[in-house]
Length: 507
Image 1: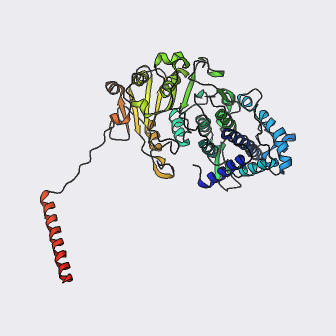
Image 2: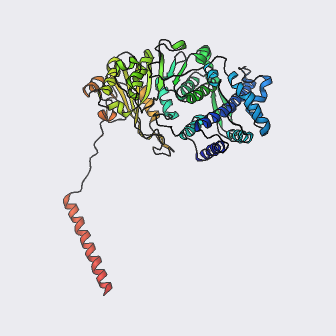
Image 3: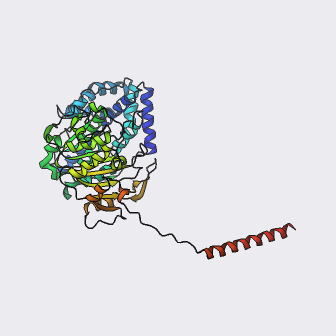
């Protein structure tokens, strides 16, 4: 989570842009994004150079010998008058070359422009971004989340960043493989796709391929997973595995940057409203028949006009609600046997409208609904307090029973501060999921239990955990009336004695 000190530094950077004449919040975010990317390119180049010295393994360089002056570590030391023309006229054009020509990333960066006109503002921005902890954990995502919170439109359309630990639980539950095609129909900044790549790196790295690197600035040592066992699949991972869609160009730019810096040089990222009538049934590149894995946290709020929605979605569930339409969309985007983990608001699980019931009936009767994970309502604070759950399902097949888990704590406080705490059900949830048994997990007083599909049908397809969870009755012990009467008599006697003593003192 972003700290108070880091918030103050970002606020100071924001103020510098404002005072420098750049007052559009979206423009500020884009410019900070570009400069963050320039620094991250240099950080990754330096890491690969150091790794090459140790291992002798070559890598695709981001800067040629005659482009070294374009590296962040070089130009950040320049004075204001020299820095501005270099960054504007040489560094920004270099962004287009930083990814393979003709790639989605190059497409998003082709119109990248430095909007900073004051040399002094650029120097201040570069110096401040140089101090940001971009290499620590999910700092890039946390920083962007905080920047996004400054937009007056943030959250209006149900958009807010999914916490990384929740994403990782969903990825771990689906266990993607290096031959899969993975998509997010509302990818935002690409958090799900990046975590899927991180899972692959950690899972497909040999013991010899795990490197230890120490940050010279912080002294912290971290494990670097080389993904050496992924070598046969590198080309697929580079350009055919990851597919993201969104209708926010700034989000897509961040998503492309994130994926590129995680080893996905040419992600299939598209500017597209996936619910619209214009969204094609034929998916790009290697996923023309649908995707193996879809991970998503679609926008919860809002409704669309029927004429704007793809007809195939309305044939399944006639509704204007985006949270229902996205689940139908995901089913359409999956290939047969493909799986999804999708976050939905609680209303999807128990809503009584015809559309709500129809969606749950579709999941249970025509597909394999595998799990309902109930999340605590504070998971998305401070940006939203909505109660949510995770649906895990496979396209096609048959539902015999459904795994439920009651997550009451996720390792952070459930208030707006979201401070780290010891209570955390996520590891136990994952363990219970991996060891689930329809015959064994029948005790509904436990956090994890399995419900037969027939029980759900009888309950009008209600998928709320509280419909099936049995809260154990805790017997209360009460004192016998005679004991209570005796205590009251003693109390009265004590009061009488105190009053008599007080009267004697007062004379």
